[in-house]
Image (cartoon, rainbow, N blue to C red):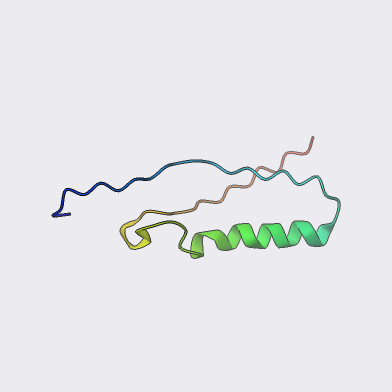
Length: 61
């Protein structure tokens, strides 16, 4: 990068808790979560910013 401009960003985590017993709702949420890395979230995605990683923690309790 030739310029001295700053790019503001953040790093965070989003956690979904699904207490619903509806299998259709769970299926839709799972599909949307798996689609998130392909949506180009954020700014400067061509430079590697705005990436989404999906992890599943299937603990019941």
